[in-house]
Length: 333
Length: 255
Image (cartoon, rainbow over all chains, first blue to last red; front, side, top):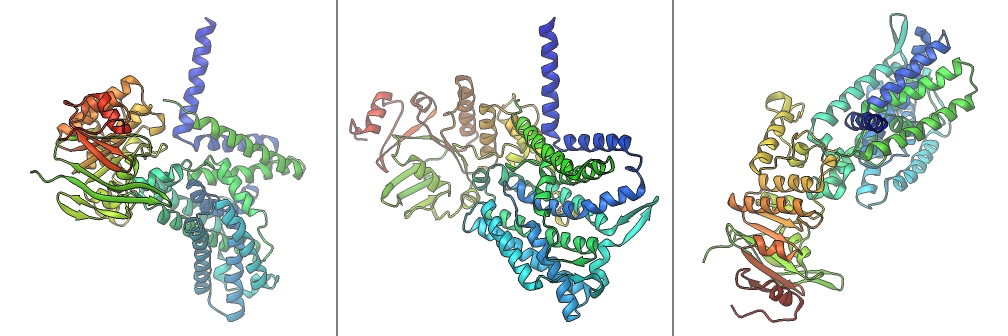
């Protein structure tokens, strides 16, 4: 009898493994739902419109960065320079507009161009010099950050000196008592667009297969260098969008802003079920991952837990998420 | 004399001081299975890579149906109708079978959905994949939507062979297709190779496994020291003689 029971238990576990293997976002979605329920029970204030609004605003910047980070990690790369690209482009947008009186739209587009060029530089170093993405972006992280300090003169640009378009992402509208920023809406639209492209286009498939097995993809006739270049450049563009959201969020452009956002974006991607080894994951997961981190930090703070334990909780989440990924990868037929 | 479907003349490939190909020839005739055998370092892999566009030879010429061609990427060779099943299989494990079959040449949906939104014709590709797998009699694979990493070694091999057979219009090259397989799976792959030939596609089979080579090959190309040493008929030469020629222990019989 016991043998039979054990057999059934194992097959249930195997079934869970297969389910998570087929749908990597289910795990993070369950974690998000469970944490929302737990924190709502712990604190009356958690599910209030004001608090939900706060979480969404806190998540918008890292969430946007995580969209770019996701496509890089899907190719088995990593982008340590994403925060630096974001801060540099936010300074460029704001300072050019504030100093030369350039209108909002051209300033914004200039920022998008700068972000894309930064990403392209990462891509060129990865594909031409064939350096590991970790090293490339560790280098460019410092390069971009230094450029940012040089161009900004280490000075913050006040929101009142900028055209209103640059601050638009921080504007809000109200739905059922919850104030929602346009930055959060932009994030949701960005995630939807990227999810569509990854799932439904040949480019999306090539991103997955390049990360899955570079040599196999090359032999299958995929121009892998071109795929990687386009991924890093697109990621750069998305970081520039994050810069726009950042300006709206802090109502200024500061060369010291977003210091922890680099690693927070990687955290969101990993907790969201995307594999650091490439070829597996989804951008919706990264949004959920960013929300999980936001909900954990906010919920623990409301429950009166010291900030150091919030940080530890996030650390534990990362390790659990990567262990889960390793387990899922061992799936058998 | 019939024009060879694929012909190589005087191919040379050097890697630094190492000469992998020292003026190698090869002829593949219509409708045949040509086995390529040779000791380690005889230049089999370099020869096959040159024919499939994965490496660019330093010297020599390649002809397809008698016309000179030059391949600088695997895509060039594919355009010429030459499909290769690499030893590493060149499949993407996390993608499903249909996605792998169409990897690098995905079909898009008709109309605006395809031209503007670049949407893939997922359904169409699945159906086509199903047809190809059925045509090759690969019954063990139930669902083209299954991820390749959940397949056994033999099934993965079948996917790679099906891809080559589906898209190869002139030649299918197979590099050590049975090397990593068990007895039963090898049997199935050998049957697949025979089926591909029976559909009219000539096959180049690179293998270390002499019983497999002698079972399916119509002619055997023996590669030695970067050159074609001999081409023998498996019906008139014994396995041990072929190995002797391959290792240099015996001179090939005068044809």
